[in-house]
Amino acid sequence: MAEEIVFYCKDYWDFSFGRFHPMRPLRVKLAIELMRDMGLLEGVEVKEPNEAPHQELLTYHSADYLDALEKEEEAPQYGLGVEDNPVVPGIFRFASIGTGGTIAAAKAVMKSDAIIFNPGGGMHHAKPNRASGFCYLNDVVIALKMLADAGLKVFYLDIDAHHCDAVQEAFYEDSRVFVCSLHQEDAFPLTGKLEELGDKEGKGYNVNIPLPRYTEDEEVLFIFEELVVPLIERYAPDVLFLQAGADGHKDDPLTSLYLTTGIYDRIGRILRDLNLKRIIITGGGGYDMVNVARIWTILWGRLTRRDFPDRLPERFLRISIMEGYDGPDIWDTPGWSGDKAHIKPVLRERVNFLKREVGL
Ligand SMILES: [Zn+2]
Image (cartoon, rainbow, N blue to C red):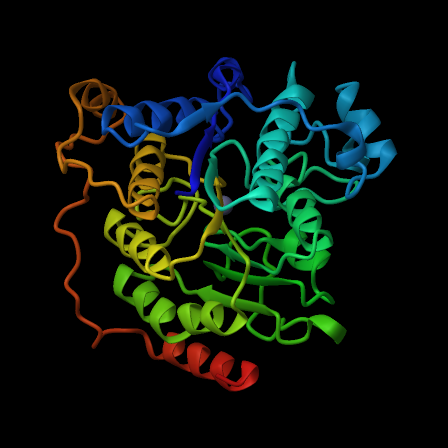
C-alpha cells in the first residue's frame, strides 16, 4: 500500500500577510481540521515540514534574492515589499516551510509509491530573483527539477485560476516535465496563451487551456475528457504533480470563473482512476477559506479513495457561517446539470486546436 502523507505546520495559522491581504494562511488549518473531522486523515501520516535547505533553494533562486528575503528587506527590485508581496515578520520561514514540504514530498516519491499533500506549497509564480503574486519561493519548480534530475517523468497539472508562469518558463524547453495549465484567460499574470506550446526539446510538452470568464463545471469536465486525460495517458508519467489552487470556485473574491465543488469531485475521481502510484498535491491560490477547505478535502478524499459524509461537521459549519457559507453540505447546490450542449464554442475551438497541435 502506498504511503499517504500530509504536510502541516501549526505555525501557518499564526502567520499573517496583514489584515487586508487576501492570502490567509489560516485556510490551511481549516482544511486540515475539515479533512480530519471528515475522517480523511485516518491512517495518514501528518508530518511537520522542515525549512527548505539553502542548497536546494539555490537550484532555482538567486543568492541575492534569497539574501534579501531572509533579511526581510523591502526591495522592490526583487518584488519584495510591494502590495502583493508584503515583507512581514517571519516571511522567510513561512515561505521556506511551504517549500520544505514540497521538497520532502518529492524525496518521498523518489523512494516509494506515495500520495502526498502539501497545502502550504504550490507557489507557482515566484521567479528566480523575484517574489510575485503572493509567492516568494517556488517550491513547485524546485521539486519538479529534483524529480526530473532523478530520472522521473512528471506530469504537472495546474488547476489554479492563475497561469503558472514561472513553472512554464522553467520547463519550456524541457520534455522531462509536461506542464499543463487551466486558468482564467484575462487574469494575472496574463501569460499562458493557447499558442505557448513549449520550444526545442520541450515543444509539445507545454499545454495551456485559457478559460473565459464564467467557465462552468461541465466545460472543465469536457476539457479533462477530451484533452487532459488523453495527454496524461499518452505521456505515461512516473509522477503526477497536481497544483490544486482552489481559486476557480465561483465565489472566489479574486477571480471570475464559475466552478463549484462538483467539478473538483470529478477531477479527483478522474485522476484517481488513472491509477498512478506516485502523486504529489500542493495547495495554491484560493481566497475564500471555506471553499478552499471544502475543495482540498474533496480532492484528498477522492484521490485517496476514502468516503466522507455529505454533511459538514458542526465545528466547520460554525466557522463557515461566520465566513458567509451556510452549508450544511460540503457540496455547493444545486450542483451541476451534466449538460454538455452549452459548452462555449470558443472552448471547443481551443480544445480542437490543442489536439491538432499535440497530435491527439
Ligand atoms: Zn491563483
